[in-house]
Image 1 (spheres, rainbow, N blue to C red):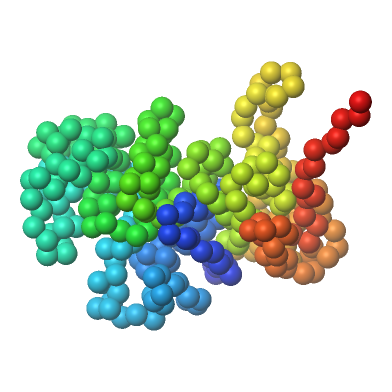
Image 2 (cartoon, helix red, strand yellow):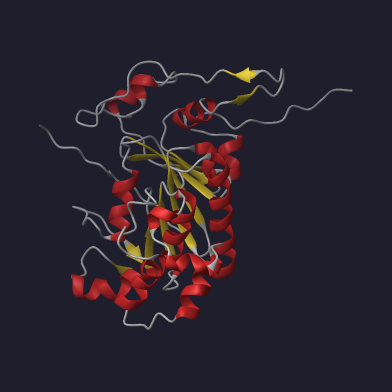
Length: 306
């Protein structure tokens, strides 16, 4: 059957109070990266440093006291809540696990903080909408005042209006609680609203890591540029609907990725070197790292002549 290396030499940092968006298509290794950070799945190599401690070598008894500092919010708002428990019990669960008394006032405070009336505590998940259930999951995630919240496709199952509302909630909580986010998504247009920096993954590796404004204004990796070109929208000149550009060829199999650069078989800039040498993630501008032998040049504004 072969072996898939889901995450290969992926390295990034998340600063206090920062949102790093990890973007890429399904199967590129985003969720595996999240599981490695949370130590839900122990990686076969590498390090995960959190608040100065290396997590991959810690036995579970030493890891357990740190887990409340890293909390996940998953994709399925209903699947992450027990249908048998009332909402107040779901929010209280992490407090009980940590040996803290979940007072009614604390549960009401948490529900109010995520935009739910405290009376919702008496309901069960099937009585709430998807967006409301995701707010409950967020209340549960912040109950222990974590430092890092990992949002794994946390809004992808919600409709567009609710997505925007929940993203605004994430941003407000970041300001109020000083949270850091690792925000995983397959939608570059969506993460633009919340990200300080964006890391783009392709076939288990990082293609580009950059400040959000620089990446959206002038992507340097051809794969990032192709992802941005595929976002539906309006042509800025004609106002007509923009036809998303399609990449040539078929995506390579993770079981048998191309030699050298893994994007080369679909890249319009590929040359012989791309097949022979795997590109390193090199800083091309302050804070802007690109894994490409022939990166795109930054767009410069042309001077107008009088």
